[in-house]
Image: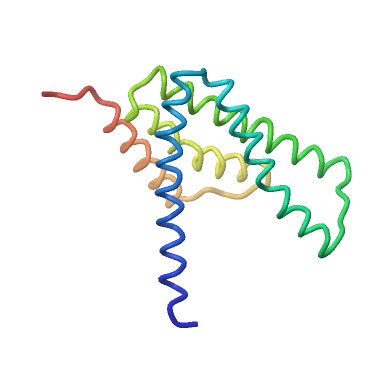
Length: 147
């Protein structure tokens, strides 16, 4: 389909701009109301906004999750989304942005490492090189700024 690549790239750019604006606005709200309050309201608003899509999906093909499915949703919603946002907003309040942002680069390393441990995958040289590059970049961004 012609133009599909551009549309995808435009959506990725829109996503990046949206998250950047969100971080700036949420940081200002956090300064006024605290990380826990902003994280709770943001998570609640996200859940409410997803309700129409969830209803549409259930209407198309009704599925009822079991205990494991409900546990996964609660884990993702409470721990990953709400607690993760709270941690991010807290870090933005107590650390310079360049240092707080560096913490986000650990997520893929931990995710791939945990996945490898859970599923018995072998992490090879490319992962080690990538990890070294990520850690090197984090170190460079956290070094004291010389004027």
